Length: 132
View 1: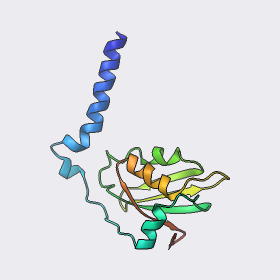
View 2: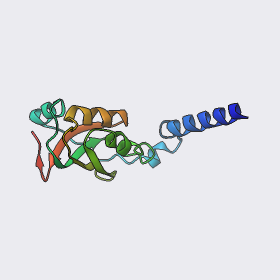
View 3: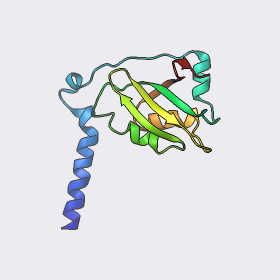
C-alpha cells in the first residue's frame, strides 16, 4: 500500500514538472514576458559574492512567462540568508523582496536561486535605481 502511494506521488510530481514542457497548448499557456538586458556593471554586480546591502530590492528576471513554471521562485529566494517578503509579478518579470540582518545573501546567490527556479536574473534595482 505504501509503495503504491509512493509510486502515485512520484508519477504525479513528474507529470506536474513536465506540464509546461509537454503540454500541447504550451504556447497558449505561456506568455512571452518581458526580456531585460543589463549593462556591463549590472552584470558584474550580479556575479558579486559580497553581501547585498539591507533594504528593499527588485530583481529583473527573464523567462517568467509561464505561471505553471513560476510557482517556486519565491521559495527558492526565501531560503537565502536575510531574504523576506518575496513578491513575484509574472506580468512584468520582476520580483520584489527585502534583505536584512547581519548575515545577508549575495547577488550571486540570488542569481543561483533564480536559476534553480528555472529563470535568469538580469539585474538588481534598489528603490528605483540600479544597484552597482
